[in-house]
Length: 283
Image (spheres, rainbow, N blue to C red):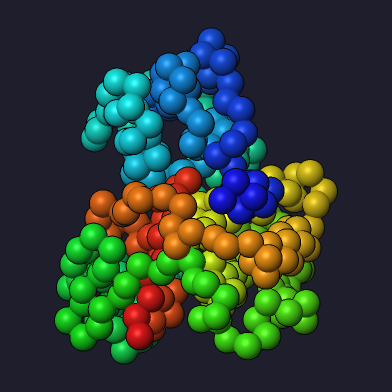
């Protein structure tokens, strides 16, 4: 189990250190950012992203990321107006120089409630609007999605653990400052990543799109090609899968609602918990 967590840690952001309280609080602009600093100072930041990555998320996602760690250390998570900036507008960087303030939502092939009416739809009901989360399954009017667990090797398709099975992500060739194009690239890459992880029986240890998105930016800033790093990690996971048993689940947690879940295919739903991820699959 520790080996799987270590290999996935090559890409995950939750293990990175956070600023000390004084520096963090001085940089915080909103009540949620101040709450983040309090949680870290109280020793509850082990599963949280770095402050810079936390700031890129929307207030809604920030609140979700903070919910459990804040509860453990007794810090209140502000709601509603508590997310407004606590510094004067002049203190906020201009749009030309600021890092994007929110993580773009994972584009889903099936529209949700906020999607335009004329958007194309898959066979499933629009988004997950008529679906219900029931523990380890999602019940929809015409389909049931079951939480994906790690699978023993005898249940895998022949050859999926062979050296020739590659993750095969394309390298991003577009303008790195074109956020819309980059988002499309990462969306397509993430879809392939999820399907490939399911294929090798590791649907229970996938990165969330939040981690996937911020992982790209961290690796690019370090001069590392993200697609190559993901390929290397995928090969390591296959090697371990051939020789080591992996538990069906590494965590007992479950998503609390469908607000952060998206369909990435007619038969796959992914729920993004920031530092946690859940994949649900329909037959």
